[in-house]
Image (cartoon, rainbow, N blue to C red; front, side):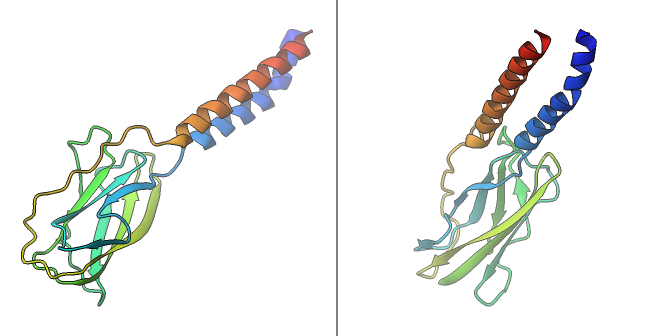
Length: 172
């Protein structure tokens, strides 16, 4: 009798497993950037740094920086920072001597789970840069990827509690 009841619960258990996996698998979204989106800078930065919410694969990531005319002004050297233990930081260096103007940073990433995201941000330089050898600015370290993992844990706990209550009533 108990075995028959457990067999009836398998669809519920499978549904819970699918719900938990869907909540846990997210894409690597942009968390922060240096320079920040919309920043107005006195001098061009030496590099662009982007930090994402999830681990990235070593290959398949790209940052492209273009000026207002559409000319590429980066050195085509997008790099995953292997010194970052979370593997969430991408950088690209810029060509020297960038002048005043508007710049667009386009990015595409490939997260460890195989999903790809893309987006863009912009910044402007209000004065011509003499050189781009300024000391690199620090980027804040990131930890957990915010509320998404917490939401998945809470959802899982609620589903398990509901299943336990349902099983308890079913067995009686």
